[in-house]
Image (cartoon, rainbow, N blue to C red; front, side):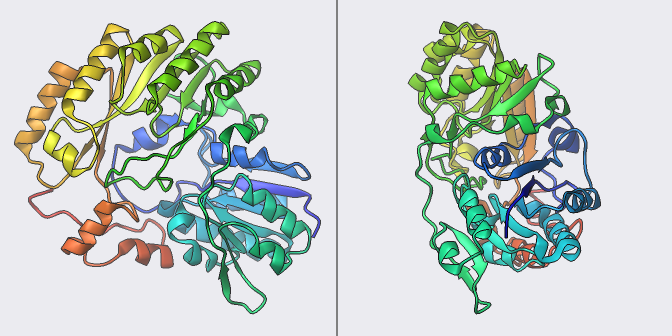
Length: 429
């Protein structure tokens, strides 16, 4: 099978699992960023045309819109980033595409969703292959294997690949967590996107985009489903080279999407100093933990064009912070936001409510601390929600607050607008 065209696609909001963690405009209208994972994969494809269909930009697509665009492209391979909350869209789009294109298109699904549900995903109509883990190298290997005739020996050598063998049985290749040097990966194929289709309400310039300087998170918050539980870093030099490349494309504002940008303060300072030394006139922001956060880091960030910092404060109550295994204290958040004020860095704080043990008195005390002591420029509130595979979800099942594994129910039989069962007691509501 000669591979001439590959379409890479993410999933639309249409039909997703119904849950509430933040006001819808925070999640769906306030921000839109290019799909970095797909752009990284696209950068590794050399011998075929690559098309991107992004359902998350400012032009929102429905399930039918997405399927029709894919079908019209007539790809030889369709690569989809799966999200568990959008399993209905995933199953429906794969079914529609395979019904129209048949064996002329091979459908490959990856993303965080396949960490938990690879076999269930492979059973969806039309899905030929499922990849676990980071697919920067395994997706190109799979493309080559398909191009060479899909020999079972070639397929069996691909890390974390799930497929149906010649006997019809599902074959699950051993998965070893990726360990490749992040500096060796080509920069994302940003020529595939129109920057004007992406924006945030908080941006300061006309053209912005996202990047990552590290992958993974070594912390163990009970509510988080980040699958990579260790951090790998790109070198500061490599990061700044990518910024310079994007500036040549007309971009001058950047949002770092690292799970915790500041784990190594010395590295952060080095990135900032390189930006200053190279006289890069940019604005940038990042997502980070309230600690570690040093004065040297705050000063370097401010001098290098940082205009906003997004902190995972989560709570002002130390008992709640211990329960969620956040690994920080309120006092650390207070010291960090004081430093932000000193260096005129605008902090956004993420707050999470709905933990067992919280009551109205605690929430009122927290409100006073936020307004009178922390005084952030922006607040992003959310409600605790049991994501699949998390410690919090397992606690709900073990305690009996959840009567059944609703994630398994939904993934095995995804339905449009699936409603999550109640998992809080009347007192907690």
